[in-house]
Length: 324
Image (cartoon, rainbow, N blue to C red; front, side, top):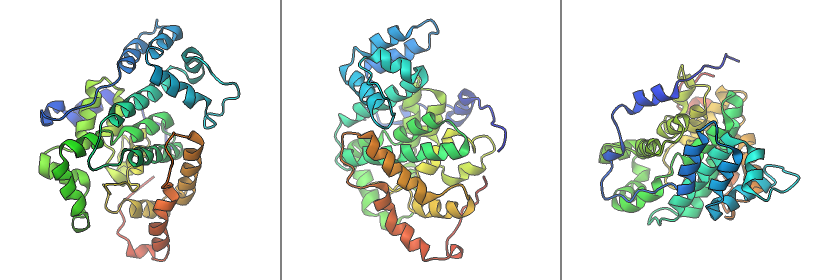
C-alpha cells in the first residue's frame, strides 16, 4: 500500500473551480437552502470551544433533524445496544465529524425532497443515491480512503438533479428521450446545452454553503469515472471512491456504459469484487431502514448486464486504462 498523501483540499478546489460560482446558473432556478439548524451547527462546530451540549441544543431546534439523528444512531446498521434518547447522547457516540456529515446529508436531502420534479421519482432517486453512497463506502475501504466522506459525497453528488430536471424540464426530457442515440455522458450533454453541468453547479452551491472542501471536491468530480484511479493526487481518496460509485445505473442513465466499466474494473483490480460489493450494499441498505421501500435492490438492477457480460470475453470490451 502506498503511503497516503496529504491533500490540500482548499487549494485543489480553488484550482478546479477557478472563478466559477453559482452565478453560472439561470437566475430563474429555485435553488434549495440548507436547514437553519444545519448551517448553525456547521458554523458553531468550527469553534473549538463549542461544547457538545452547545451543538446538541442547535440540533434540537429542528425536530426533524433530531428524529433522523436518533433513528440513524439507533438503527441496526450502527449496532448500538443501548438506545440514545437525546441529541447530546447521539453526538457523544458519533463524534463531531460523523455527526456533521450525517446532518449535512440529511439536511440537504430534506431540502431537495420538499421540491417536486416532473422527470425524477424522488423515492427512487434517493434510494439510488443511498446505494451509491454505500457502494462508495465499500470502495473507500479498498482505497484506504475516508469512508464517511465517500458516503456523504456519493449521497450528495447528484443532489441538484431533482431541481434542475424540474426547472429545466424540456432540456432534460430531450436527453432522456434520445438516450439510446447519444452514448455521451449526461454532463457532456449539459455542457453542450448549458455551458455548465450539475456537478459544477452542485459544487458551487455546496461551496457557498461552506461545506467541507473535500466534500465539495467529491461533488465536483463525481463524473470523472475510472480515470480517477490514475490521478497522481486523488487516486486513493474519497473523491475516487465517489467517482467509481457514480458509474452505477440510475434513472437518467448518466453513464451510458457505467456498469460495464465496473465489470471491466473487476478484471483489472483483484480486490474489487463487484458482485460481492453489490450484495453488501443491498444488505446494508436493508439494515438502514430508510423509510422508503427498496423495490429495486442494486443486485436486481445490475444482474442483467452482469449476466450478459459473463458470457463475453474481456477482449470484446473497450477498457479504460486504470491502475491501482
